[in-house]
Image 1 (cartoon, rainbow, N blue to C red):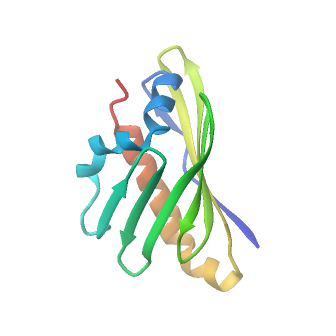
Image 2: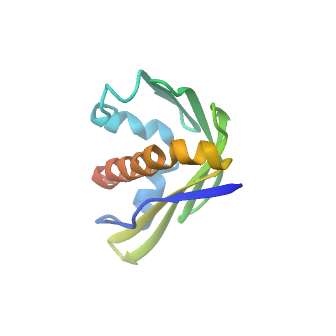
Length: 138
């Protein structure tokens, strides 16, 4: 059964194109690496197209960008994960110097697993949205 988790819509005080350019090249994550709570991740590595994290109790997760639709969508899918899922970032302009962002995770989950991961995934997607909203996109 397909389950979707969506972040709340976030306002970002930077132009859509600037946000897209920064987020579509994952090597730009270097500037936010220090904002990630160390108790949440055991390791965090990335290059321009993929990101790998090791999460306590969940294990290794690797996501790769599979589609870039400038300047509005960046789509990821899991390369390695205890639970395969897709993740995407949507950006919509709200003016010349601002945009809004929404994050979505879509996973095939049976009802038992969904019950176990629903709350952590929803909280996790909001924390990722918090971090992306706080970035300077200049």
